[in-house]
Image (cartoon, rainbow, N blue to C red; front, side):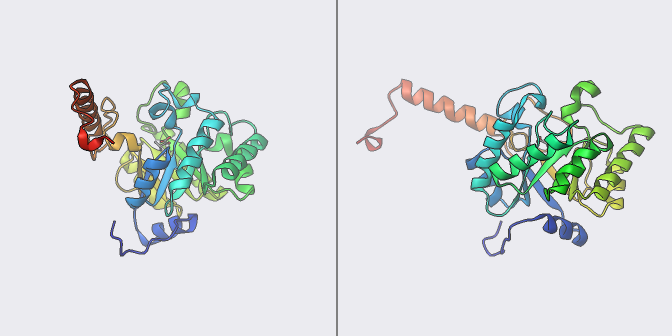
Length: 271
Ligand code: KIV
């Protein structure tokens, strides 16, 4: 990104005006201070401290396994690094479903202890009361529909969602509900591109797609996937912008060889 372009802190209002102007929103995940600073400097509009941290940072098999303390630790680290992008934090599984009072308490704790600008939660009408409670505290929410990984045990996997008429109708109704309730944007994950395009046209809040085609108002990817750190994960929707897995393995291999052969450190690297 050019040093000459004046960047301002992105807010929920910026998101809305970008949609109105037809300017695409670029979002990536980050979970730590060093990477978040680089991602922000690269020019993204928003950073998601996703509960995908459960997979890529902690090695859990699903996102259900991460809790409030871990998400707050990751999110606070990200916020300390970020100057311009809006920081959105995923609420962990079990912290907002079922009990609206607990939902608002947990959302407020995330906002207070991290300094982030918004939270993201997964689901539609089934958690309507939680949406209302969190929004009533003045906390902006990014909704999340389609493939919602915290419900993997209900779906039985991570396949395409809303691929039949009734599920598609339900998704449109849920997207309309989230807009009516006052969410500032909604993630659409792994749904047919034509359906994401229809939702995007019908809503006045921005849609952020992942595996949802190019007519969404913005796109989000998991940083570790787009940068090629996890080279075993290759879903169709993922575009790789680097192959850091190879770069890291090669660098580590060279370091090990240099230590074993007493090539490192040399005289100029010694005191
Ligand atoms: O946790 C996450 O990274 C997400 C994105 C994939 C949207 O929810």
